[in-house]
Length: 190
Picture (spheres, one colour):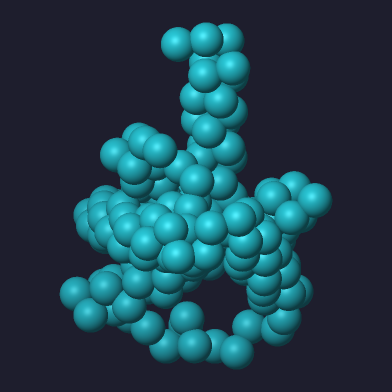
């Protein structure tokens, strides 16, 4: 393996890690909001594990879809991946500044269905990122494990921190995650 191959491998690891953290910001911001309303430590663990599971499953499905689409699109792949990330990042930034409509407050995080819906809602965007990454990432196992680990750790951190701090931290976390995805999308395009 030449020097170019080593650089490319490390470049993918850094890219995947930064994107995993950016996607975890969504779980973090929701965790802060739920934690502020009060949550037992057992529910913190259960919800975080469920979020980690969906942060593995959704990008895995997206990676396979993206790999297939990448073969179909050929050279347009990079622009399609960048466009997807720009849209997702812009959506996350926009949502972070929108007024809370109360939908997340209506879901009861103590029930199995509530945890499932919460975990799925913060993991859906990882499918889109998985599609983008599937067009050029070579190490699928490392990618989905990084997404799962970051999603779980960020969720647990947000839930525990939410028990102690103000709500504004969650909004800034989601905006930061969206800005990171937006920046990566623009880098792919240009």
